[in-house]
Image (tube, rainbow, N blue to C red; front, side, top):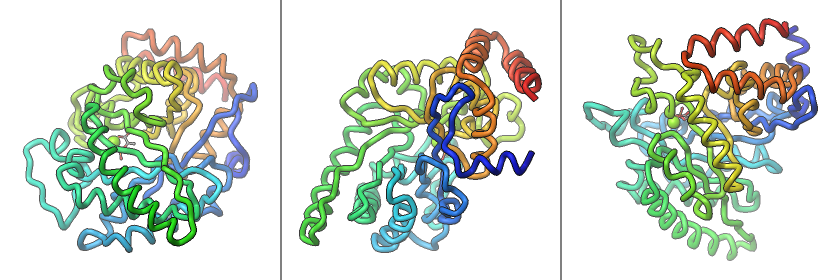
Amino acid sequence: LTKTVEGELDKASYTKDNERIYIHLNAGLSADTNIAVNRGVDGVGLYRTEVPFLLQRSFPSEEEQTSQYHSILATYPDKSVVMRTLDIGGDKPLPYLTIEEDNPFLGWRGIRFTLDHPEIFLIQVRAMLKASIGLNNMDILLPMISGIAELDDAKVLIDRAFDEVSQQAEEQGFELQRPRLGIMIEVPSILYQLPLLKGRVDFISVGSNDLTQYLLAVDRNNARVANVYDALHPAVLNALKHIIDAGKQMGIPVCLCGELAGDPVGALLLVGMGYRSLSMNTRNVAKIKYILRHITVQEMESLAQLALGSVLSVDVRTMTTKFVEDRG
Ligand code: PEP
Ligand code: MG
């Protein structure tokens, strides 16, 4: 079986009835993006830029960031690489930056931190843009957006960085394309503002890890409440369904990059809800492609419909496990 599953690595992902599913990678370390391991993926759906920051003893310089980002972009010259701006705080503290708060997950993290430190944000965005000169395969993703003001403020800074770097690129004889801009859907407030995203973003990426944490008011890393943290809670599933429906209605591409995408049951439910783009850790890619290749969209739709109508998470778990077992 392992051999069969590994045979999936080179192939694009299709369901049993030949519906194309786009599989992207979640990455942070350059080792994750080793092209030898990741031939059959459709690009990088989430590059977590915290990782290079975590590996340093102080904030990496613009040059250091540029070279790190360039090596990732150059690994996938013909595919898109979604680079998320710094998402520190919460579960991702930097050793050289002390933030003391009672509730770090509700505090100074992600876009909140970088908008309060535009100099850090601008250095990072300039480094991303410089890294993509000559490649033009980079998209920018903003984490922890809770309302439109944060998006608008970030855009002003990104435009400023773009003007500077595109002029430099032109002087070197390159045309820098404006990167596509997206936001993470992971703070529940934005679920009620999705129609406002039309014309404001080029794509959205669902962070099911944080969305689950914030919808259920449960710390994603606290073992004591691990039984409450459940991405298969019918409320979470209905939120995910709402997002994909809204994305389709607005004509905005939607990817889901939380752990749920790399979980066999999660992937089946997501495709059944209408998701066609999933981003996951390298180790899950072959397994998910293998499973999807053996099940039709219609079967996944029926399963998702039952799950969305369930009262209890345990019912979702029982029916999905049975579904997978019945199919070997
Ligand atoms: C998420 O929240 O689902 C996500 C993909 O981002 P992170 O796990 O880095 O917070
Ligand atoms: Mg997140």
